[in-house]
Amino acid sequence: MASNLLKGKKGLIFGALNEQSIAWKVAERAVEEGARIVLTNTAVSIRMGTIGELAEKCDTIVVPADATSVADLENLVDRTMEHFGGRFDFMLHSIGMSPNVRKGRTYDDLDYDYLAKTLDISAISFHKAIQVVRKKDALNDWGSIVALSYIAAQRTLYGYNDMADAKALLESIARSFGYIYGREKHVRINTVSQSPTPTTAGKGVLGMGDLMEFAENMSPLGNASAEDCANYVLTLFSDFTRKVTMQNLYHDGGFSSMGMSRRAMHTYEKGLRFEDVHQNQYPFGKGGE
Ligand SMILES: NC(=O)c1ccc[n+]([C@@H]2O[C@H](COP(=O)([O-])OP(=O)(O)OC[C@H]3O[C@@H](n4cnc5c(N)ncnc54)[C@H](O)[C@@H]3O)[C@@H](O)[C@H]2O)c1
Image (cartoon, rainbow, N blue to C red; front, side, top):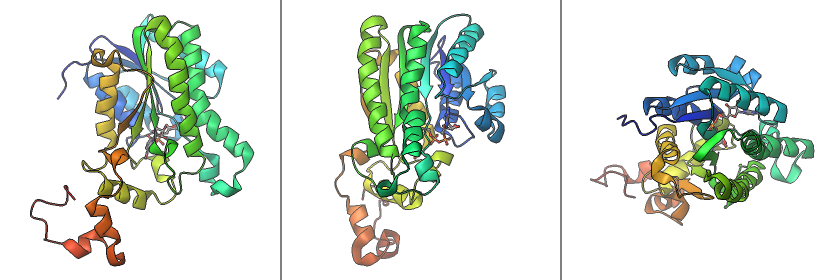
């Protein structure tokens, strides 16, 4: 379904670890839509994951960079501009990690060194990447920057832990820098608040399976997949969204506007699963419940 949406555009994509990664899907689809890209991840993730295969498929390079290191980011942006022979048009921040989540530290028993790392990796790295790109004047006029967020920035969701605080900060950075970069160079900055998605980072969230099922039951359109997310992000890199900036954009099948759905209600009725209670009673399927 390629339609050359990004023909002639060039972009830098953070965070493709493996085929499940949202950034992986964005990279693939961006190239299908006519863009040229540069990929980046940490040296460890490049070794542990399969980003090399993606680079081959997308006919591009992978530049190692720890997104918390300004020196690494400066080198990354220089090498990206070298590769493109000048400025580029879009940047995707698709990075998240919480040592507290990884080590099983609950929100009422946080390790504060870990919390500092969570915030640095998952949110402040977004500020650092934008600041480096702006100081080097690396983006073209009317460029577009997107980071991935989650609704735990606005609502409390059990198990999301200190990543909720990181996402709140991430969304705030999009607004604060969106004003500066927009006023100066018409560069827009938005966050996309995505459904729970079965990726390496996603699977690290406590109770991810149940959370995905709950969100699926609550959302009239069902959960958005990584592929759906990639398609939405591409529209934000395209020229069709030039006046959209400083927004947190929900991409969640309608979840964020729901209070309670009939489907979710049935799921919890008498402690039985929806499927067990209402099998064969819905001739038009469960999608509308
Ligand atoms: N999976 C979900 O349920 C979900 C939902 C909403 C938002 N998101 C967000 O989407 C983004 C991408 O995550 P994903 O689900 O594709 O998982 P993923 O595990 O595939 O991607 C996370 C990436 O962050 C990278 N990363 C970690 N530390 C880094 C550092 N210091 N420097 C540079 N990169 C670093 C990892 O190497 C990895 O590639 C994250 O911001 C995540 O919070 C995910």
